[in-house]
Image (cartoon, rainbow, N blue to C red; front, side):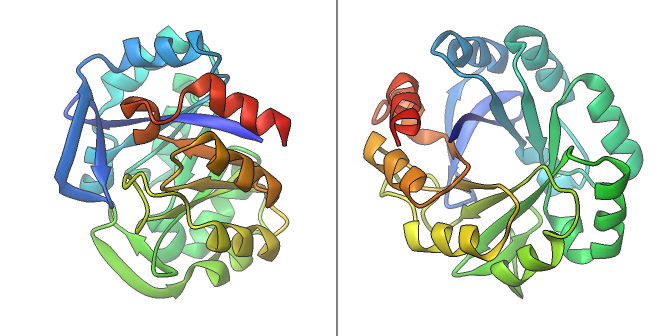
Length: 239
């Protein structure tokens, strides 16, 4: 199971939001590139980036920070947040990003998303952020009536890189992941599923691995020290 340390970007800073609430922001550093280097030095082999400003605006807004991270980290990085057009996809992949996470537009324009998956096979990740099992959009500001698993099943026939499944109710709360929801998503589709939200301890990582998850994204736990990256990597590798 792959471990993705998370770097969430807002205003050029490295931050975390609790349950996706922009009013509950914690700033963890003003140098995201230095943070990326730190995770690589700790053994990280890939990094998950989120452009929080981009998610709200509908277009990438922290590209200078992303470029600095790519130059500093030199490991595969994925980016989500505000990716809404083919030209943007091409530009971001040309920057050196390994894959891109698309959520809102995959829900609103599934035909377009399917075409983009076929145009960029193995490069696009379906980002499903769910609140009580329903898909949230627009940087988690809105919740649709679409069932998360049904969306995943519809899209999984495309050549996806993976499905990133975030449980918003547990995200940033340091209370453990929604193991049952993650397991249901994994059982529902053949595509790789990466879990996100609430991962707090090495035991959480081991439990996700035991449920068959292909990866997990870890944010606040790494920044606040309830879990170290070496411990997470060991738990993933031991399962």
